[in-house]
Length: 80
Image (cartoon, rainbow, N blue to C red; front, side):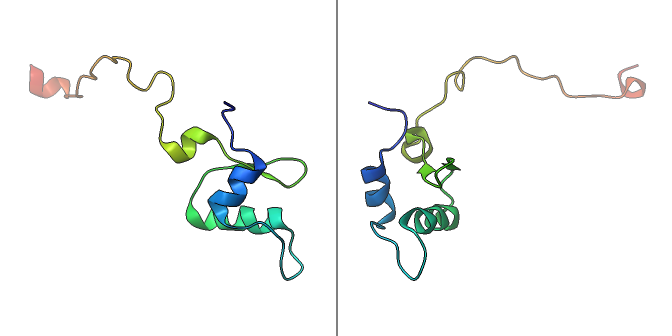
């Protein structure tokens, strides 16, 4: 399975399968995705490219790795 949605899947996701009012399908889909807050990139042909993880909420590699706790800052005057 590709990490990106296919053109048909983006059609289903946005509900836009044809252009209308002088705008292409891809222009309308990009506008819908922007308005919906779904992250995407627009490729050289004007098509929206959406990562599956952006919609499905999968964790990215490294999200759950243990990270050392940061020590809070304290002025030396108070610690003396």
